[in-house]
Every structure is written in structure tokens, then in C-alpha cells.
Image (cartoon, rainbow, N blue to C red):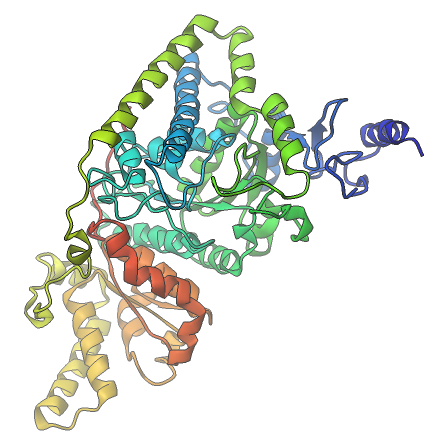
Length: 571
């Protein structure tokens, strides 16, 4: 049959048939004859000249509102319907800054100033737009290796980000982290993580730390609306950690936003070829976690949806926001982009699905003028040039930095002499049931008597150490299996019975995800203990164990305890 006639026939069928019933044939060529409907009720934006393997979905604000109503129960959109001109210009500055910054990174890489791994975000600027518009300074942010613009949108000084890429001492991590490990205490931007999906449980732990803050000091944190946001690709969201963290988030109603960046590509693989279901926003249905999909090329409707979803997370608990994007660059500068259909799709996307061009068209359609946009671009261009020059001029790290970052404490540190927190006793008394605390103290005294007589076992010694620390420091927490039953080996004993599930949490049987949650808590002022029922179970958590060991170094020696005081979002 004639391909052109077949294309017209299939496009006509797509227009006439119900979206839920129509699926175009998945032709194995650089362009599909027809588009694949992305979700029930969505349409696709295509052109007569070329239909990409992965067409752009059309999800205008009215369709996004329908999703918000159905999945989230939101009925009042009065605070989301309008985006002011001031906010539009701020958003435009953000997305242009992201584009200019990444272009500068690419140029610096080609010139040899940046080495090693680097992953650029061109085409996905709507993600940083959400962050700049709806995520606050006090919110905990966990990104992956394509995080430069996420960090800048979070308020991390761009000159420090660029200096980190240049591996300079003025970088966010003193040059020790590089492109994939941006980390900044002041803005609660907690990585930059290199291993796919490892950031998911870290963010769940950070969200738990928010709940524990409120539990320990309810007056201090009255009215607290902080959340944790985790950035993950559509491929990483197919990882088993996603299911584990959705379960954990749903079980505790964690204030956790799963922000799924769906660019449809791995390094050399079209994600549809390996994933049975790309409706990632629906993964939460099994757990009662709502989700929705937006068109990331429509920046305006994306930030409107972002406002509604982040408000929901602050007030109700976890949610998934899947953002359909196109990545204009290869996976990294080393990517030859040989994957099927990639180069044709990239060419099409730059011409027809550039979020910046689409935003400009909407702004110029009655909101503002070309002169206003040009002024923003000129400002951004000048600032990014200054940022690059700052990174070039910044000093190299000292020769002994590696030795300095080997371990956070001096080799001779005696941990037995560390004083208890000044507020420890008061917080323990105010947050623990008096009768349960008295039972634990009695048991601890019995163990001390055994120790004094020389009859204490190794298990009893471990129990005594755990309980002593949990009593003296209310920010000591524990993760284990079978805690409600006193644990399988009676270690730890009386932990959950004394301190409750918020500080002594029973876990599903996957050590990796709760080692990860503990690491997230540790980055936010807590002292987590993780019990592995058997040592070989730790194999499930090798990624998390690895990061637990090297995070001090890759963050340039930043302490894990972040600022615990609420901060307003900077203007």
C-alpha cells in the first residue's frame, strides 16, 4: 500500500476513533506512520511532514484540570487558572537561563574545561520551571545525574554549580562531586546522584525527617508545609525502588512528590521498546497515590499543574507528576546517538516541540512584547558569561583535599565522650510515653548490671547501646524488620514499644530501600541505625551502601546535618 495514503488513513482513524480504543501500529522505522495515543483522553500534536516515533501529547490546561479533578479530587482551580505576567517573565528567565547555562557547559566541555561525565538538560526546561515556581527553599530536593538546572532553579548559586563542573575549589562540593553530584546545604539541594533510581529512597527518608521534626517539636514546626521532591527519569521509575518507595510514602502519608521526567529515551534505547507500560503516573493507583501527566513542551500549563500538585503534596501526602519532554542533546557528550529514530526525532523536536519557543508564542499572543523577552535574554546571556568566567578564574582544590575528605572525623575520635544533645532529655520526655520509657530504663539498668558482673552477651550489649542512644538523643532512629514483635533475634529489643513507629520503623523485606531511607534521614539531622537480619541481605542495598560510604567525599565534606530552621522562599 502507498505509505502516504496509509498515513492519512491512520491519522483520520486517530481523529475519529475513541482515544482509548485506537493504537497505531508500531512501525520499526525512523518515523512512525501514525501516533500512539499517550493516555485516555489525550491527543497528539503531529505535522504533515514528519510523525515522530514519540509524538507530542496535547494536554492543555483544561485537560490537565480534568486529571486533577479525577485523580486528586481538586475542584477549585481559582488559584491556579491565572498566571500573572510577572510570573510568566520570571518563568521565562528561568527557562532561558537553563538553556544558556547548558549551552555554556557544552561549549566548556568541548574546550576541555569540563571533563568526565556530563549530562545536559536542553529541551527539558519545564522541569526547572516547576522547581523555581513551586518548590521552596526548605523543601528537600533529590535529583539524579542531569541536575544542573534543577539545582539552579532551587536557588543554588549558578557560579558554584559551574565551578563544580570545572572541578574548582569554589564549586558546591569543592570540585569533588563534579557534574553528577551537585549538593548545597543552604538550599536543601541534596544531590545529584549517579546511580539510576538510588535517589528515590533517599528522598523518602528526607520526607520522613520532615514528619519526625514535627513529631519531636510540634510547636516549633506548627504550620510546617515542607515537602521532599525526587526527580527520576521514566526508565528509573520502572526500577523496583519506585514500588518500594510508593509503598513507604503511601503507608506513612509522606509529603513526597515523585517528579517523573519522561523523555522516552535511555542512552541507546527507545523506552517504549523495553517498558510494558509508560503510564508511570498510574503506578501509584495500587497504593492510593494520585498521579497525572502533563505536556512539558507547554510550560505554562506545566507550572499550573505543578502548583496544584505541590499544594496537594503539602496538605495530603505523596503524588506523581509525569512530565513528557524531549531531550535535545545526546545522553552525554560521548553519546553518538545511534539509537533508532533518535536523530530524526531530535531535529523534529527542536523545530516543533521547543518549550521555549512555544512559551514565547504564548507570551506574545497578548501578554507582553518581544522587547521584554529580548531584555530577559540579554540579561541571562551576560550573567551566564560571568558565571563561566568565575569558574575559569576560581582556584583549583588543594592537593591534600582527597586526604581531607577520607573520613569526617579524626582517626582518634572517642565517640563515648560525645555529649548528649542539649535538648535531648527534654525532647525524649515530651515525645515518649512515660510508662514505656520507664520500662525501657528498667531493662537498661538490668543490662548494665549484667555488664558489671561480666555476664552480658553480645546481643544484650548491642541492645543496651541502641536504647541508650535512642534515649539520650531523640534524633536517633532505627529501621529493621519485625520490630513490632521485638525483632526475630530480640535485637533490637523494646525499640518500637518505647519510641513508636515514627522512630522505630518496621520495614518490608528489602534492605536496599530502607538503607536508602536511613541515608536520607542522616542528611537531614537524624542518626539512623539500620538492622540487617542477616549480613547477606545487605546485597540488596549495595548501591545505597556505596553511597553511604562515599557521600562525605562527593559532597566536598559537607556535614549531613542541614539547616532545620524554616526559611521563606527567596524572591
